Every structure is written in C-alpha cells, then in structure tokens.
Image (cartoon, rainbow, N blue to C red):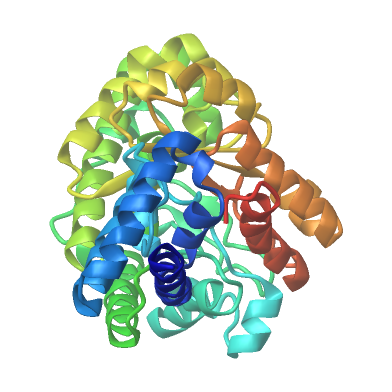
Amino acid sequence: MWFFVFFSRCFLHSVSLFLFSSFCFPSSVSLLLFPSFCFPPSVFFMLFSSYCFTLYHLNPIFIIQFSIFNFQLLNRRNGRLEDMTMLERFTRSMQLKEVDKVPVCSVTQTGTKDLMRMTGTSWPKAFTDPKEMAALSMAGYEIAGFESVRYPFSSLGIPEAFGCVYSTGTNDSPPHQLDFPCKNLEDVANVVIPDNLFESPGIQSMIEATVLLRKEMTDKGYEAPLIAGILGPSAFASCVAGVNNFLMWCIREPDTLTELLKIGAEVSAECANLLYDHGADSVLVIDSEAGPDLFPPPLFSELVLPFYKEMTYKMKGLNMLHMCGDATEILEPITESGFLGVSLEEKVDMGYAAETVGDQICLIGNVSPSNELLLQKPEAVKRVAKQCIEDGVRILSPGCGIAPWTPFDNLKAFVAARDEYYIERGLL
C-alpha cells in the first residue's frame, strides 16, 4: 500500500511540476516528453526515480528552485538558447557563435513604397532629412518585421564632401552621379580630407538620424541592432575619379588609384567610428566596385585588401562588407580582411561559400531583391529564403538593396520564412 501511495504522490507532484514548467519553460517540456534525446533510457530512469524521491521528501519551494535550475541545465545540454534578444542573436551570429535561429534582417536599404505610404514618409526627402530617414528606417523593424533597423537610403555623404555631384533622386529611385572632381591624373593631387569633413550636410544628416534612432529604440525598449551603411574605399575612388578612370587606373595607374583608396579607407573608418559613437551597433561598408564584376580579382589582394585590413583594425564596432555581383573568386581573401561578416548577392552560390569560408566569416544573404522579392509570389520568396538558411547563411538577408516597389506581402513572407524553417524541422 505504501508503494502505491508513494508513487501516487510522486505522480501528482510530477504533473504539477510539469504544468508549472510548461508555463515558465515551454522548451523544457520537450525534454520531459522526449527524454531519449538527452539521455539513454536507463540513465533517464535513474534520474526520474531520484527526482520522484526528491519531490516526495523536499519542501515545494526548494522543489521549484531545483527544477528551474535543472530545466535550464537540460536546455543548455540540448543546445537550446533561451531569451536571446535580437541584438544578442545578431552579435553572436557575427562572431560565429551558436544562436537559437539565424537573424532575419536587411543589412541593405529597406525603403519601399508601401512602407513610405504606411509611415507618411517619402523619397527623396528621406535621403537627406534626418526625421524622415529615421521614421522610414524604423518601419522596416516595426512594420515589416526585420530584426534590425537599417539606415540610410543613400550613402553618398562622403563623396559629396569631396566634390562629387548627385541628383536629388525621385520618389522611387536613389540619386545618381552627375559629376566628379578627378577628370585626369593631375586632379588626384587635389583630393585632400577637408578639415570640416563631418560637418558636411550628407554626413551630418546621417549623424542626426543615428541619434534619433538610438533614442527612439532606447525609449521603446527595442533590443535590435542599429545598422548604418557607408561607402568603402573602392566605391569612394570610383565616385571621385569616375567609373571609367577607376577601371583604367587599376591597370595603368595603380599608384594613383592607391592614393584614392587610402583616403577612402581612412575616411570610411573615421565615419564608421563616428556613427558607433552616436549609437550605431554595426556598420556595413558597401564596396561593390572592388568585386570581380568590375575589379580584376588578381589585383584585389594587392590593391584593396591592405586597406580593408587598415579599416577594420580601426573600426570600433561590429562591421560588415557588402559586395554586389559574383564575389566567389575573392571570398578567401575577404576572410583575411578583418570584416566579421560579408553580405553577398544571389550570384554567389551560398552553399559553396558556406563550405569554403563559412567557418571563417559570417555569411549574410542572399535572397534576390529583384528575381524573388520584387517579382515572385510570397510562397516562392519563402522557398528561396529557407534554402538560404539550409545552405548555411548565418544572417538571412536580401542579397542587395530592396527595390522600392517590392510588395509588402513579400517582405512579410521573407521574415516569416525564418521561423517556418525551424518549425518545419521541429527546432522551434
């Protein structure tokens, strides 16, 4: 009789504790339902018997405290990471550490016509007006559901400060270049860093937007990464010298081009640190002009890579590189650059990238913003996004800037695909 009473009381205690744990630690319940995932049956039986004995003899307060500790320990043993904020998840992914699920972000521009309509903002005003920039940037997080806040929508503040001239842009297209200062080799000698560089309108508007976004995110308790985008040294050199000169000089006048790359790297690093100081969590360096689609791959390691190393050594926060086009040929040199992450376009086979460099740098991407997000149906977007996770991305993101006319439903499908991927595999 005593045996029946003992196990009856143990069973009731166990059911009560199971319900308590289900409410407080839902992921722990799977360990009770499927113990063989953690322990062999014989070991689990011994643990369960000891556990029942403890439940029968110890007071309820200690039981609860012991159970909380025990379930947390089992969760860690099972590789489950609980209560991770978006910023923590993003940071750990950049550092190649384990996460509960990959972040779903857009590290490139997020302004779409639907988000402009929903927030009462618009291009081209959001290119330069800090308040409009901040409001539209926040919409990517608050409305579309990206696990990051990304700004600005045009990264031309630095080259403008050196004399480059751009259009104002339109309500559905960014500014384009109208003029540049270095028409010939002799003009390069006149390119110097202005004393008041960071007082230029384009950079000032970005700094003000950083302050506004950081304050709003802090006031609202948002724990998501604030990501700024700036141009890198090759993009700077291409803007200042013009694309034709940039391409010719990398072959015929590499020393001259190196002077521009040096200035671009120095200014980019200083600008990045200024943005970190004002509240940015991460800076994306956009430098597609150094990619194989434009720049000869054999020259990348010789001319560009040394300046990447200088930049990243100086940068005080999380950093990423964005490379448009097919960057496959320079993936291995990029891992030596010091950048924690690299954002890749869909032209790169992410499965191959993961196999070759996935353990050396955080791979970000690479759902096509045109072929999928702009033109396909939501289910097709989800399918491609899930495949990116399967291929080995550490941060799920569009492969480049989101097109302004991208349907809102496709943005939501892109974000939803991340959790669906894990649910379908029983991981959430």
